[in-house]
Image 1 (cartoon, chains in turn orange, blue):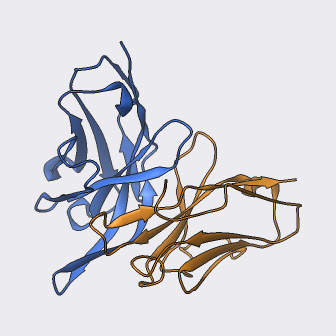
Image 2 (image 1 turned 180 degrees about the vertical axis):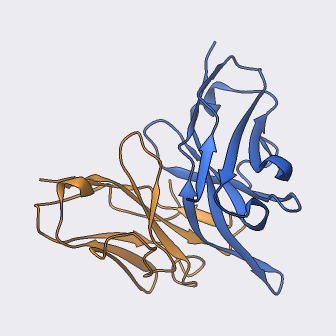
Length: 111
Length: 126
């Protein structure tokens, strides 16, 4: 069982928007603004999409956005494209002894 | 271009030892922490530990403490992940990544992993 809870799967049609949630506790997501999101295509390494809850690294499309409310962080993808079909993981700093936690991952299907 | 290049896939038997590598380029290797992340077949990401190549300061996730050894050779900009006695349960993809890590008033925080190496597949089977 992962420390952060994500839905196992989400889906959407091209052009639509979807949101992936990432729920933790006050010891991680809720207590610090150190949430990051990663995209992983099959057989590929993860790629950083969002850091510090809502900041996009250079080169990442502005169709990806992040936010947080309480103990839940969210990744929103707008204007869905076929190439967005991938697994998405959230991560957070945690004040527990584990220091870093990941979500279990969400598989995005573009219909 | 900031890049991490990992060593190739390995097939080992239980009880054997193994050391995989992660070579950085395109940035000052000694100034950024390198983290290691495990991904078991069909599963999610698990943080294993981190090293600062500049002074070899190393931290481990409790789940991996005593199970693996993380090291680095700053002279060749390379970090390593090592096992002394592999188990079948070590079969997984292992990624290195440049990891944002900073300490303030004795508490250390992490913010992101970027970039990631391409991964090293380790298969342990008799």
